[in-house]
Length: 404
Ligand SMILES: [Zn+2]
Image (cartoon, rainbow, N blue to C red; front, top):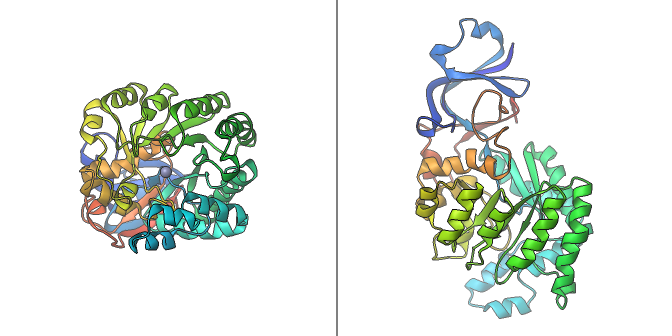
C-alpha cells in the first residue's frame, strides 16, 4: 500500500537526465515518508488507485524536491536596520562602529537574549523560507562566541526544526568574529575554539559541521587550518566562508580538509577552482550578500562550470550582509547577477544544496527511496521559480510524505 499518490502534476525531479529531470503528466507516491514510486502517469501500475490510501489530484501543478537552504545564520537577536539606515543617511563606517554597530552589536544582543526569544525571532525568519518551499535548512551559530552562548544558539536551532517542520543541519561557526573579550589575544580565542569548544560541541552532538570566516577582516588561513584539524579529529564535517572580499586561498585550504563546501567565492582564482574540483567541494553561491553589499567582483561561474564544480545557491540569511528570507529571491539574483541558468539555480537549492550538506542520499532530488519532501507550485514551467520576484508561487509543502 502507498500512503499518498499525487497525480495530475508535472515533476521537476532534478535527477540527471532531461532538463530539470522533468516528467510531464507524472505521478508520485509516498510510503512511510519515502518516495515509493514515480514516473509518467500512463505508466502507473493498473491497480494504482486501489494501492493508494489517499489520491491527491493537483490540476497541473509542478512538483519539485522540497528546497534546501544550505547556508543561513537564522538565529540571532535584534537586527541591523538602524545601521542600514544610518549608512544611507551618509554616516561613515567608523561613526557606525563608534555607535556600537556591526557584528559586535549582534553578538551583544544575542548573548543577552534568552533561548526562547531567539527561537521566536528566528521562527519568523524561518517562516519566510518555508512559505517558499524550504524543507531542509542549515543554521550556523556564530553570534555567541563562547561555549555557553554557542550551545544556546545551536539548541535554539534544534527547537526550530520541530516548531517549523523542517529537516535541519547545524554548523558551529566559532571563527565568525573575534569576541571583544579576546581583542588583545587572538591566539587564545582560536585555541579555545579548537581545543575546548569543538570537542564539547561534538561530544553532545550539537553540530554536524564546523565553519569559519576566512578573510582579511576575519580569520587567517593558518587559524582556520588549526580549527579544521580539530573539527576533522572530532568527526565533524567542515565548510568555509572563502574568498568573499579578497583571495585568501581559503577554498584550496577547505578542499585539503575535504570540505563539503566553500561559500561566497567572489575572489576565487584558478588554483582554487581546480582544488575544489579535485576534492569534490561544492561551491555555494550567495547572491544576497553580493547584492546587499553592492559588490562588483563576480564569482568565476564559467571557470566553475568548466571544471565541473557543482554549484549550490543559498539565502545566507543574516543581519549584517544578507537580511533575506526568500529562497526564490536568491534564485532570481543568482540568474540576474551571476548569470546562472534557471535550471542551474533550481539545482542549486535542491540537488546541489543537499550535496553541500552531505544529505544527497536523502533529499534534493525526487527519486525512489529518497525522503518524500516535496514543494508543489502554481506555475506553468520551472523557470518561473527564478523569474518572478515576490510572487506567491507555493501551493503546498510536504515533509516526509505529510503536508505541513
Ligand atoms: Zn554566511
